[in-house]
Length: 399
Image 1: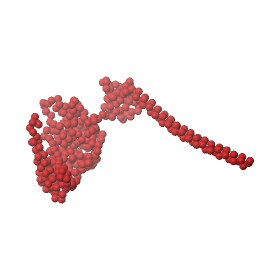
Image 2: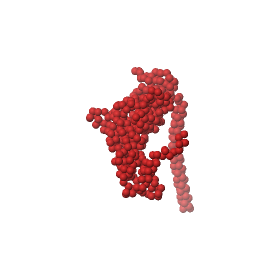
Image 3: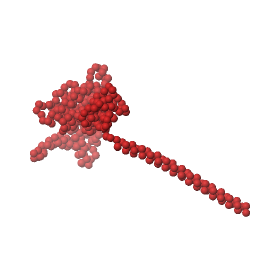
Image 4: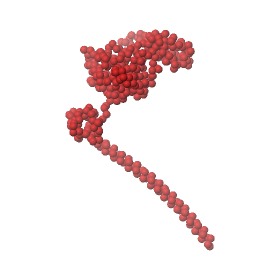
């Protein structure tokens, strides 16, 4: 009888322990669920605050864009809104006084016209797109036959940016601008890229024709914003290619389009005058028609140094061939000097085209190396028929 009671008590104890374990598990599960729900509640409360602030922001009245005209002694300012008249208004306490400069673009409250914020200066997408984000990969080793020209360009652009103290010690001012003149394909753009790469400067490349716009004043505005971008990104190099398209001589008799080009030119002249020779912004121009450039553009104080980038001589052509052949799989009997002697009067671009054409002829024959015969055939195609291919075009295509 006693043993039976003991067994019954033991069974009850085991049952109570199992129930206790289940209750503890249920309690732990309830606590975990509580923590999860508290975290979810916190997240939803944050989302609610964000949505409410966004709703308040969307319900806020729009701001008016205006320009700052003057700053008064009592802290108020004179602004010009987009509607036309000038107003004397107050300034938000969150704006630093140092940010308020005459001519700055500001946002105004719709009701009180109080200055709420200082806006950044607008830049045309054409101007911002002119900045070369990636550093130019061209180095001095990639340029052949222009030793004297590269030395003059480096003296005028690289040294003032990297070693300005040299000019201070000597007591002279470096050239303000450099103009590269020469036939097409002689390496003018390549030289500008090499200098930009060596100086780690921001390279801003613009084609002169992009400064010619349809509406009055647009071209001058682009020039002004172009130089503003260069100042912000300093040290920087502005490279204006095909300068003759915007810098041609001014004529007495001109159409409305010519007058707009002249306005753009005058803005360019004014910007060139506004730079100090020792600034961190350098200007390089390139043209193959220096004879039609305006005299005001060529006078000292604007483009101080004019560098003639002519066709390379035999030694220069040999260097250019050596640069290209170093990356090509050629036979041992391919001699850069002999190739250079066979292409008298060729430009650097034509030499590169000859090398490319020779490689394509080798691929056409199913070879992985280039022979002398490939270069001879490529020379005939580029220097012979290539130069005179316009003569083979039927006359009816010219009307």
